[in-house]
Amino acid sequence: MIPEAKIDPFHLMLSSHGLKLRRDRANTLQINVGFLCNQKCRHCHLDAGPDRIENMTGETMLAVMDYAERCHFDMIDITGGAPELNPHLEELIKKAAALAPRVMFRSNLSALNSGTRAGLMQALKTHQVVVVASFPSLNAAQTESQRGKGIFDISIEALLKLNRLGYGKPGSGLELNLVSNPSGAFMPADQDQTEKRFKQILEKNWGIQFNSLFSFANVPLGRYREWLMRSGNLVQYMEKLASSFNPCAVADVMCRTMVSVSWDGYLFDCDFNLAQGLYMGGKKLHVSEMESRPEAGSLIATADHCYACTAGSGFT
Image (tube, rainbow, N blue to C red; front, side, top):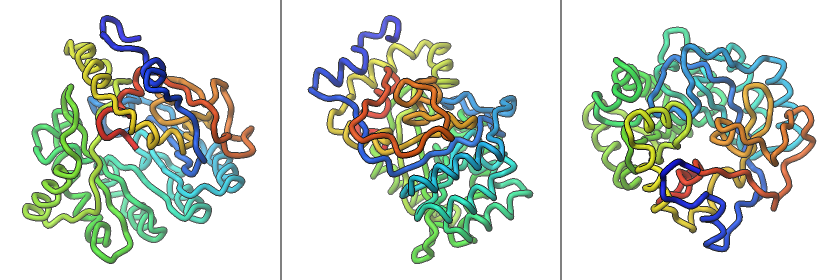
């Protein structure tokens, strides 16, 4: 329970609407390859950064791929930290592409834009990996207040490189999606309108194209929660999330169809529960011990950060 916030615990909010958060068929395997990151973003729920040493080993990666082969997931979702900083990443992409019809790669763009990443970009193209890129704002000052000095221009350069490879171009088969999130303690703007505005301005100013944009509320964990507390916004933000609870969003939250594997191989319902230390099924289970997908109908661990995924249009 958030101190002083006038909200019900998340599980009671669900109950008041006659709901329980239960698993559907798990079709996505999300792999968090580590908390090491070249940025130290203010909104990061994992508190990732250059000072973190957690990084998935080759041995753990093999165990994850063995699990993927046993379960035949529809999608493998690679995230971090900055996944680009894991030395085994290209091998993971190659193996994932052989095991799932759709592979997604989440990037902060600045790590992908390093001069040493040309081979990685080509590997993404070769295996037709979907790139999901963080691009919070069209305003350079807002972006850099959240993500660091110089990040806006570096991100633009990375998007241009991806476009030159064919990413985001009509008919290329190479999907490039952007993720936008608020820079402060407020809810995101309408997603459809935000996507339209981003497409117009990125095309007009830089000739950049992309497929879709997703706009999500920041999750009050990690470094973002610390910022909310320091700025005196935590109570207000939590109350805003709770008052925006949308019971219709519960059916489509990502944890219902996802298995999330941490850098050390342990299993969670989602990356946010990973950040909170809420193990899948309430049991610390290593991926090497898991023979099949989690059972449909089983309960999902929840806490008050789950309000971020059920506010407004939700977080899917």
